[in-house]
Length: 358
Image 1 (cartoon, rainbow, N blue to C red):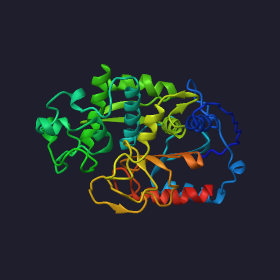
Image 2: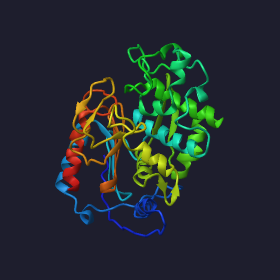
Image 3: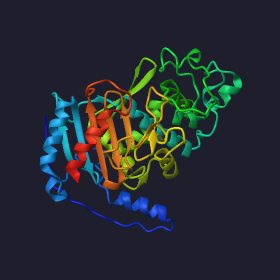
């Protein structure tokens, strides 16, 4: 295990513009530190300067060890405050993001839309061709890319394999937009939409338009029907920082501003805790993967209301908290039971984190 706590240097600058929303966005970005994209250096911040609770940090560390964590990072204003590695891992160790990587796909859709390759309101059949499901022509044509991004395709979920993207696995349950269910197969096909729309492989488009621009070095790999993403914890932290700055990396708008806002706010009324493949805290109720039950209350009651998250199976966690200027990364094995997306671990972990930063 490695433990890192080092001094802080903050810098501020102002940007003048006629658009007040742009001013706020640019100022938020300007107040953040961005690590260089061509080397592994990353500035750090000290616990003392931030006046965080060191005793609570030790308790957090013990909790992480006990819960099968392999990598844990906290960024404040873009700088590393805490960086822990466990179980013979280090900053170069790659980890599967699992469904936390859905957020990467969502961002890539926004970029492709900005460049005119696709539009999320268009039928998915425009990019996948007719017959990509076993639904009727009318039922299939009603499904849009936005439905895929929001888990509202209406596809039948009482099937043997929710990852199966073969047409015979994709049948009708309800009208598109009328119900919410965490159906992986319809998500998986978003990458085919991007590939077909851009006339290049999804990996190539993602690498050139997003990953390379922020200095990430992860990779996609096939796993059955799935295409999974793997990287080290710092790569995940880079992507978290991009989203903390509203899609801007060191003054360059990577994720289009308007799409970023859509992506990270309530996308439909059926599950208020879901954007475009991002989980949203602070809402009055929520639904979870594997269920169509609506639960009352906030997704993570111990966390700040404005938290957004990429959440993957076995407790792979990417948290972004604009109000606190925080990015938090947790990678490793399942804490006690294997669950998709949100889990009780989120609430436990954020109780520990808030004790450190309050």
